View 1: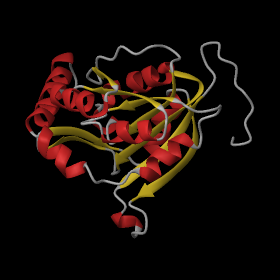
View 2: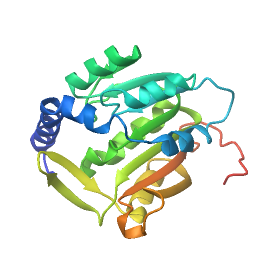
View 3: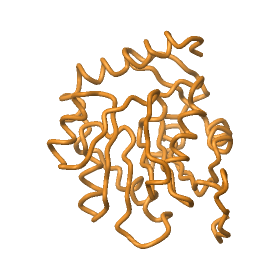
View 4: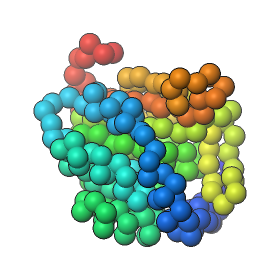
Length: 221
């Protein structure tokens, strides 16, 4: 676990530098990835009438921004890698904020949903609760957070030039519940494979009542 602000800054700088250096390869390598299951999991739990306002947290070059826009929603991207931000803005026409995950500046109560696909595992455990609470605060009451992370046995550290934390389901539940979320569903990906080969944990969460927000009864709970 990182133990100082300097170490956290080094983690951010080194991880983002990797994405900066490999931005075009990453765009080509992930362009055809099918995450429609994850997009559907987020959207089916959002209450109210579309179009919805969605934050793509760690949007990369903008693949999923395009998908949300094609579905008629208002999508906003966020990424810390300058090359990704420029790609996403150019390719999608969406608003894209350049912010690293450890220095967020998000509007309060603004989004119907947050789509954190393959992004939150880069947040060191030392500051994960703070980041999750910031995502909680940027959601509207009853807003929905989708997360997908590579799963593991809660090991934390470097994988080549990228920092990651590989949570199991029990630990991930504790983090999200402590941040004020209520679990709606979880599943493992890719579908159709034996459990040992399903390396990604996907989960969907609702912003629970807090800070004066009334909790609305829901048959899903």
